[in-house]
Amino acid sequence: MKKRLILVFLVSLFILTGCQFDQPGATADFTARQFLEMENFKINEMFIPENKTLVGIGDSLTQGVGDERKMGGYLSRLAIELADFEGVLDIEVQNEAKRGRRSDQLLTQLKSGKIDNTIKKADIIVMTIGGNDIMRIVKQDIFRLRVVAFEKELIKFTKRYEDILKEIRILNPDASIILVGLYNPFSIVTDEDNEFDQILINWNQAISNFAYSDINACFVPVDDLFNSNSNMVYHTDFFHPNSKGYEQMTDRILKSLKTCGLKQVSNG
Image 1 (cartoon, one colour):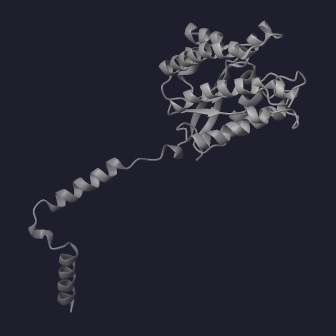
Image 2 (cartoon, rainbow, N blue to C red; image 1 turned 90 degrees about the vertical axis):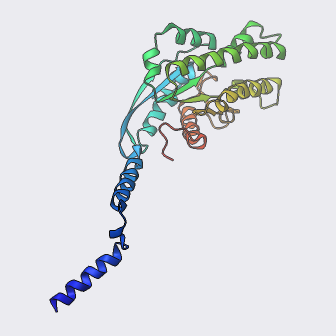
Image 3 (tube, rainbow, N blue to C red; image 1 turned 180 degrees about the horizontal axis):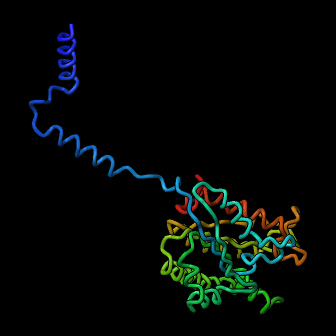
């Protein structure tokens, strides 16, 4: 009986191995294939939480001016939300923005080398710039404003914006860059359609074009959030957002991170 069981076992083993005892190299092929499969196997990096660095550059909107709750505007709020993303261990925030800064001044800051290390280690860079470029034109000739003045300045602004992004990419080719758009603070005075609305459309279009040309950049429109003050989103200076306004900006940026499909710090 034992001999019969042993014989059945050997026959079964022979069948299961596909009769490959007479095929030299079969075992070697299997081993090679197994090694190849293991070599191609990658552990999803999202399973290993990492520290991330969030950097803000630009003007007063990124600095957080007008936030009566003193929470640092949208940048600090964004950091709090990103800290809960899968794969994020902790978020370090570095805010290099300054009230009143124009695009030419931001370009000078980047070229100075003073924030090179900050840009180099950034995982996400958020930028607001352009509002003070427009306001300079308004202040220069407030009683005789002409659309042509904004059109001429837009050409210069576009070139500076391009140079700003080039400086960033030289230092950090891989960081996700969030380009926040402009809004019309004069909508708080009147809800009538005017030439200034078209000016903002043109400037925002110029900014969004840069986002489309960079696979890891994202344009975030915010003009609709500040179209009048019906939702009480303005600070008492009627120019900067208040806490509620910054909260809405934060929500918009978070949604844009998903829709843009950025590589860095995304929770899908």
